[in-house]
Length: 113
Image 1 (cartoon, rainbow, N blue to C red):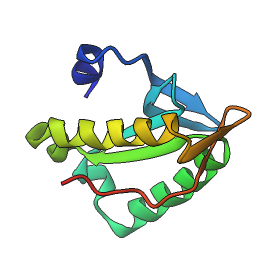
Image 2: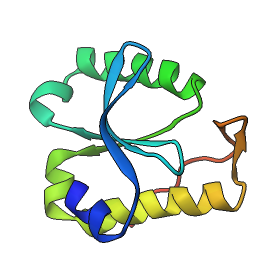
Image 3: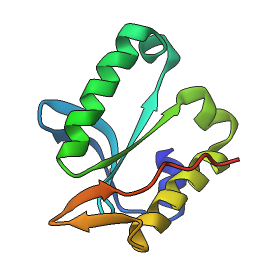
Image 4: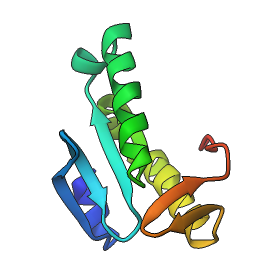
């Protein structure tokens, strides 16, 4: 994921700290957090509930979170990048409104095909 973001000239930080959490990747120009989830650690109900609660807290701080499975990234990075770029498009066109460096969603996240 990082290699693809660099190739497309996105500014990002890795292991960015928010509240008590460490995030995988933060796109600094858009307040988008990209989480690259391994199935071993995240593909069970307890972990998914923990991730959901974590995401709610982080989104209240003004970030948009996009989650991708590690195998999804490996198999189809293009599809993952389309989802990221769709989100950036929505932010840039005020479908996701920036308010005092916070992001407020006014849309249902589209599925990239």
